[in-house]
Length: 403
Image 1 (cartoon, rainbow, N blue to C red):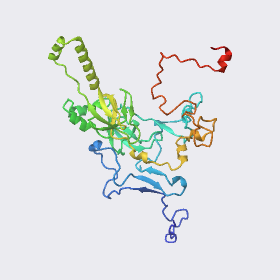
Image 2 (cartoon, rainbow, N blue to C red; image 1 turned 90 degrees about the vertical axis):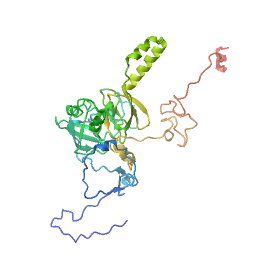
Image 3 (cartoon, rainbow, N blue to C red; image 1 turned 120 degrees about the vertical axis):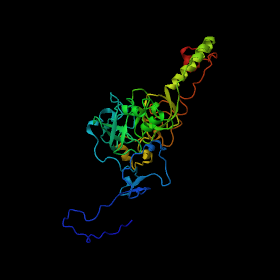
Image 4 (tube, one colour; image 1 turned 45 degrees about the vertical axis):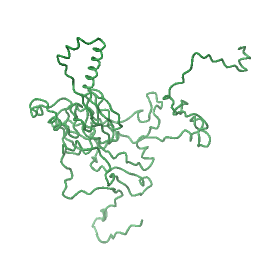
């Protein structure tokens, strides 16, 4: 498309090195909502936002940044709009370089154990705090991009000690907010505000905010959480990628055994006592665990003392990203994946021929192991041992003297 000429004579500058016209933009945002001029650039944090539903596509669609097709590589490039990310470098002392065999998919002897890995831009691994045992309020300094994960990370500064740390950022978290971790216990000021006893309503209203890290038993039912732990004393392992979350769906209460029940146990039979003991053990197990539903629909029982962060993992529109060209995958340490039928016969069991079929060969891996078609999943063939199968006889056996 032809662009109109720009009149350069309208503005004359004494310095020839300074541009007389503004630079042309090569990127544009589609489906972006305009904010009113009176609105603040960074809205105040609202505790009710912690209970908002997960991000969904509205009528205007998803905010994606497109680029003017100056080159074929950016014609189909699509990226989510994340203008709030930090433009500078990360904190150097919280990173370490990624080196060695891990980049190429090799083990300690140099053999390829993970295919389709190699190359890529050099990067530094961000040290992320998944457990968050440090108490006290922590200020969100900025939101940063992490090349090692799809979600964004937030740089925290402890207000009491000044210690810096990285955590996985929640969706909607911005610089200037204050988050806190209650993994080491309830602070003294919160105990005094509740009158020295645990009030579930007050505790949820004061602690279940977006970005706060809590034990699972302190999180109200129906809250969205991410960075969920699986073992007590270990950091979060579930729902750490972009836009993922889990839902706390049930909590069990401990059973109180009263005196009359103990007297009735004397008249029960041994089988009934064993059945009652098993039921009590099951109830105690449920009381020590919280029922959590993951994004995949899986329902799991997780120990009540495991960690979880309130909210949804950041960068929920990541799955709408389009790389635009194959080279951008190579920058991310991903090598090409070639079909077996497109290889030569010496390189793959499906190779050879004209590259259209695998030559009436059962599906196999590159090393000749059967795959697909229910292999390793269907039940093994049951052979009736009572039937004695005759030994096959051929001409070679007759020559060797087999009868």
